[in-house]
Image (cartoon, rainbow, N blue to C red; front, side):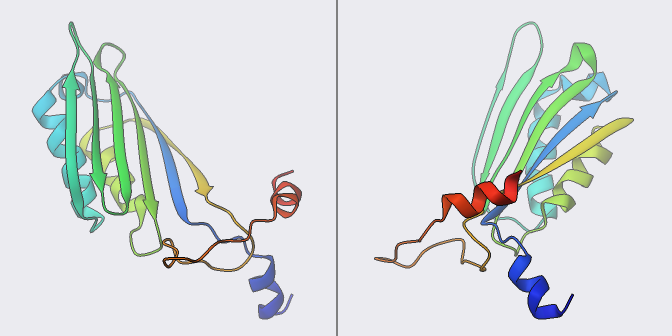
Length: 152
């Protein structure tokens, strides 16, 4: 297949969403609010993201939910220390930030012995590359029939 054909058939997305299943983690760190918060913030910084806001909540008797809002989208976590498990979302828009950098950092810091990552492309609006922010007054043409053909 020629390079031009590959480019036409390539799907372009506005963002990449990684779903992390962090199993068999260090239970103590999953229950430590300060550690979880700092680890998510540091994962964003490792990926060279710009932190906009941070919000975390500790549940009783255990478990933490939190989000680090970044200019490029977000990192979110829900922990179940009693099971040594954390569910994490790393969503980045554009192609300047590599969400895998943050994901690998989190796997390492939470000492997950059985991690998995599912990657989802978000905002597939056709086969031409789009800026992740439209210009004022610009509308995007979306061909739902083309998207459905690609999905199946």
